[in-house]
Image 1 (tube, one colour):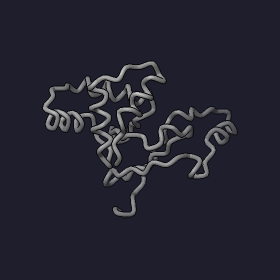
Image 2 (tube, helix red, strand yellow):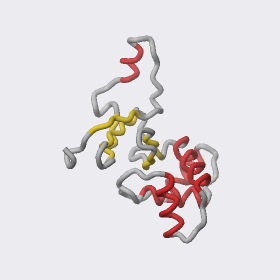
Image 3 (cartoon, helix red, strand yellow):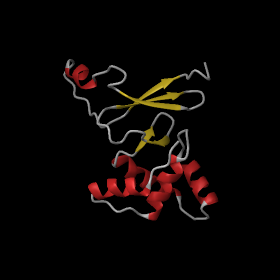
Length: 144
């Protein structure tokens, strides 16, 4: 997976009038190096082992929440893991297809899957928040 440049992170922070701290950079850059989602504890161990820092788990969770709110990280609630958003610039519903065996994630969007969640939910008198992501448990081709 391609790592996110500090310039892109800074641009997102400036747009939202947020500060870019060393721990925020460290967490998202570490997560962006991984092809699979990681738990907060996996991130903590990797950062503290490789960077010789002493971050604590509450800092990791605060930083993850910060990036989730900016739309740069997705949380996959079903497996309590996180991954960097591949297309934060696109305004659509992110569809996170995660393998229930190996936890590999294929990120796509509602438009590419031919889904109009706004229209579909409106038909049954509901509204859909397009800023939310949808988690779809699947079995990938490698595991099936």
